[in-house]
Each structure stands twice: as structure tokens, then as C-alpha cells.
Length: 359
Image (tube, rainbow, N blue to C red; front, side, top):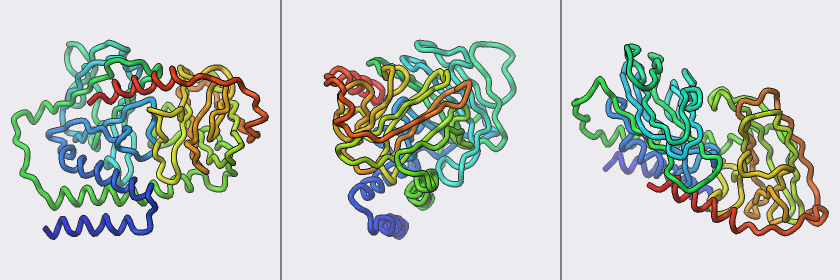
């Protein structure tokens, strides 16, 4: 009981002084990391934990992807099986460090397309051990310091249909019983993850944007611990209700890109299932992106949900040259855009999300 009391006291200390959105974020983190600590920390009996989705919100989740991770050991041998379903691409990373706290360096990164996989294909990937003499599938070497495998599966066309399935098994510990539950260790793991998340993400946007003026974008750049083939650009957006931010982007031949809005300071995604808060290369129409609190008409509107301030993040994959972003604040009345019926777009989003997160 004392361990539980200590856990509750630590969570209560984090909640002091938070507004309603901050308390909701804290409750979300408690639910997320208690679930992780209860069932997903044993590299001898691994399972994929969906660590960021419409329920678990932290760290700037990408609306086009599902993120999942499983604890592993660099000395182990693992098999990842499954089916691509409607998934158009995935990124598999072998990471070093902890799943949330303490950083996570990237030891290896591969994509579905680099493995010759596409929608509808079966997945057979062997991690660690000696290279197999033959047989189907792919083999990936494990760094001796590897601690988890991270998979992001992507859906760009947002169609209703079966998403990807990923199953992980450890092959060199078959039959080993699970250890007895250590409640104290479980609660300590969860508390550490929540505390680190609170400290890290509450100040992340301020550290990232620095003294960048509002409504302007940082120069596109990579992130050491993000997806290695992706460039990112961010802007703190702060608009009056009658203004819009018009964003013109030269994608410089990037094969895929997306743009998305987040709350401040917690870096949670705005509602991308029921509102128009994100776009990508498959969903957008040619022309600028228009960010505003109310519908300006025309294509490519991003809805701020009426918030005074949001974060806008743009991502590009495999851009042959560095993209360019220009943004300008204009009165909504000056845009003079034709009214647009958003119903079909919203119905497409909700139907796709129901399938993507069906369980």
C-alpha cells in the first residue's frame, strides 16, 4: 500500500497548478505508462505497445501513422510477422536507450518499401541471431545495446480497410515462464515515465522554437532521434479570430509530406478524426494551406479549433533538396474563397480512423 501511496503522491505533485487541459494530459500519461509498465516491459516476452494514438497523446503524434514499440534485448532473437493490409509504408527502427526516459538513439532504420513490401503483402522479419541460410523474409542485425523496436505504419489515402498487423515473438526464450509481478518496480517504472514526460514535453515547444517569431516557420531540418529520412519544420501559430495564416510550400520533390496542428504546450494532436486539422500529399489539393479558426472556404483549410495558439508541424520524406516554406497573416475577408462542402472529407476521415484503430 505504501508503494501505491507514493505513486499517487508523485502524480498529485505533477498536477499542482495545471489547468483542465494539463490535468487531462496528466491523466492520459498515467493511463498510458501504467499500461506500458503492467504489460510491455519484459524483453523476454515481448509484445507491441501502441504508444501514441487518438487515446494516448504525447510527443507530437503523426495523424498519418500508428506508432508501436516492443522491448527487446540485443542478445535476443525475434521474429516480426504480420500483414500490410492497407498500410502504404512503414518505418522500422531499432533503438538504444529507454522507451521514453533517457533518450533513444537510432541504431538501424528500414522502410517497408526498402524491403520490397507494399499494401497487401505478408511481413516476415527476423531480428538478431545469425543470418538465416535461406527461406522467406528478411533478416536485420541487432545492435548489442538494442533495447526496443519501434514501428510506425503509415496511411496516406485515408481509406476504410484493414490496417497493418504486426506480431513479435522471441524465438530463443520459448517456454520460459514470466517472472512474478513486482508491484513496486511496476509503479516506479510508470511514475518515472510520467514524470519524465511531464518535464520534457511541457517545455519542448519553447525549446524547439526558441526566439522564432510567431507565424513563421523554422528552417527544415532533421531530428537526431526522429525518423532519419524525414525533414521537419515548425511554427508557433497565433492568430486573431478574423485572421488566417496562408502557407505556401515548395516541397522540392519530396515523395511524401504532411502538415498538422497541435496544442500548446503539451504537443498533443488536435482532433484529426472529426475536424480538418491535418493534410498530406494525398489529401491536399494544389495551392497554399490556410490555417484559421473558422472555415475560410476553398481547399486545404486547417482548423485551429478556435485556439489562440497552436503549433504547426510539417514533415517531408526523402526530399531531393531542402523544401522552402513561406507564411503570411491575412484577414479572412481578403481571401475571398468559395464555400466548400466539407462533409465528404470529414466522413472519409472518420471512416478511415474507425478502421485504423478498430481494436
